[in-house]
Image 1: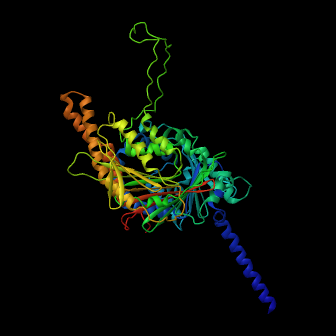
Image 2 (image 1 turned 30 degrees about the horizontal axis):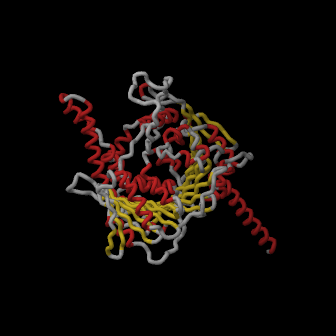
Image 3 (image 1 turned 120 degrees about the vertical axis):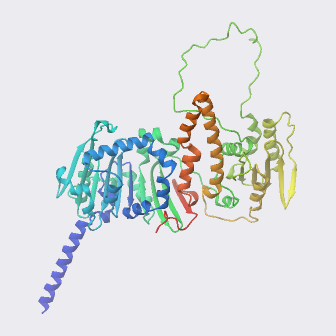
Length: 603
């Protein structure tokens, strides 16, 4: 009896061991993470625990429906970028012998998935996903595998086919494209390069010791810096390589390539939560990068922002130059900045300069020429007032409200400066007034700086064409273009210091406050630009034809950008927060929905 029990126990162990081995073969990629099955060399990866649900939620969202019926989407479908992407899609479809549109993407969207991009210009990528039971029956590539060339790696067969888009008149470049795919158990693999797929299958089988993406230094460091809880989407970027690609150098519209190159890698997690989307980022410094200085608290400044403000930004430890630039742009000058077209190189001047001109009989060569002052010399008094004691924090706030009965749209702004120790009110007030007088008047005529007391708030208001309001309370300076805004900020100053979690930067964009004013202003500007363009274009005989042509094209700001804003009108605010952790940068971005029932929020 005892022997039977032992034999039965051994049999159970054998069955359990067999089941464990089978399960390990079927789910071999899960314990190590999908990045361990990717060949090295990727520029970025995007990973999701349930890609099919994300895709389904997006396809059924009101945001997607609104965007695809918008002027913004219409312009995009007529752009050069859209044309090039369409050409590439046709080329891949020609290689695969089937359509590569949305139905195909839906058919191969599994649960746990990873996408790796290896070359941007040549569209080289690898995609691995876990299929649901029975999902493989709906994948057209698997059904048409007989038209592909079969190859074998270890114990797995994969299929590959190369070709270009069919039809010489399709508008495609005729570039040779490759489509490769395989199914290994419940895993489906798709690639646009044969060697990527073959190496991934080798890594999944574990038959040979081969390097993987997970072992690369940048990826390992970024993965270790990632939060313990995996987001609905996780993206890791090799910034050291991405920022040196020609596509990034040519088309990165933020124009902050130098700043981006300070980091070698980045990790981003996106979480879909009730009423919001939360994005957690970690930026890893490049070799030799200087660690950011210890940050002062800026969250206390964010509490000073009025409720009707549309956008604000609070930064820690600003330099005097940064403060001067913010004061100049938001309050003191408020003039249109000249835009230089820098996408073309300047013309080369090959002429030989000559000393003097024989026809110039008016200039005395023995007299000292007058010194031409610097264009920004009027800011010198303010620079002197700010250079003595470093600033600890700075806040800039702007607001605008749509005016139904006025052509002009006032945009009010204010800047808050904070330092260690109290400000010298008389000295700072004098520095601001000296600069303003030199810009707005001759010999200071018409600009005064009276002091007002009301409701316990002491203000100085400079009269003139551009009013400037100044308030100084202890270690805080508030200077703005609207008295009610400045009073509101001062009224929010805490009577006692409040401690908050340290944040180097806090910023927020509030779409409900900004959108009406933006639509009014953009309509005025686009209409003025359209009228000016028609006037410069030609004769009165072509006026009606030009008007019809202009009417058929959506205006960029009001129609194109406005329709994009309308598509995401359920977005209430976007909030940004940055913290420093040694040499790492941690960023949190919150997308707050104005309506909790938005279909972009988790179901």
